[in-house]
Length: 215
Image (cartoon, rainbow, N blue to C red; front, side):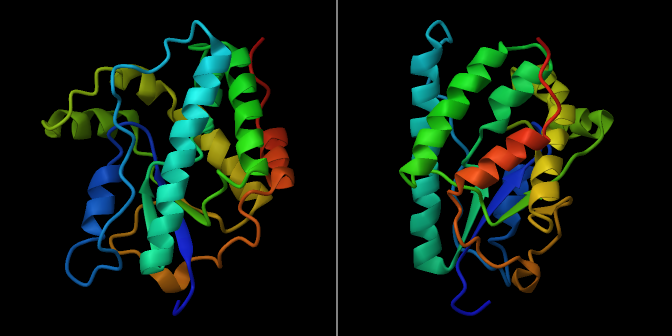
């Protein structure tokens, strides 16, 4: 892995242990000294009454996290991100379970496509994802007293669609998804960096692999 740059996204449903795993990579014999933190709500996020404004807002938020990842990658050779900076899966998952209109995803997809064209967003080289059972998620939530997770039930319901999303990426780009959290990340097992992380054709291929959203 010498001189090889890599961006790794860490994913899973709420209470899957994403932040805990990221922090664990900073312990003894770690491969990282810092990671890109998960987005923290401010209380001023768009409420969805204007889907165009909402899409623009999240594209900007996610582009900022992507920029942080690229800067960290240059400094240390590896950037681990607590949740995928692309984050387009969230609105798709909400639409898949009927918690948001499909139009929200369509608007956010358009905003993401524009960000790809400007090289402000892209696919991570590797996604490390854990999908615990619903029972395990609830147990881990109860053990974590540091966070309230007010929308836990909704986020737990998104686990199925989330699996569909990353399975689509795995089919389009085999080897780009690791379906468990290894105790210690082995950089020698990471795929090489993508030649074009902001490839619109790759984004289109992933979208075309997804199940149709309910009408």
